Image: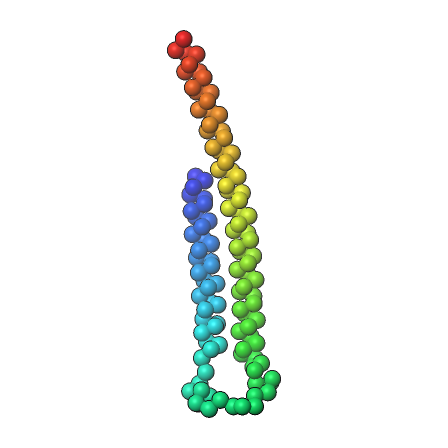
Length: 111
């Protein structure tokens, strides 16, 4: 059951992270595409107003939000993995204790 939870959680994280990566990649690719007429002759005197178009600002803002979401998800994922690892360690200790008790009982039964 625990193994299923870990695998399910991992699959969910991969899907979510995949979506975030897809949106981020799309934003970066679309931001870098420029119309052919602008590529042919670069202007020497570009003012700061041209560099900060509303579309570029929106994409940068979206990229920042996606990065923040990614970091939050990564932090949450790490916390949950630690919790699951602690639970797994506890289960191992319980199993070892039971095995030792069983060996002790078998030893006394054989006498």
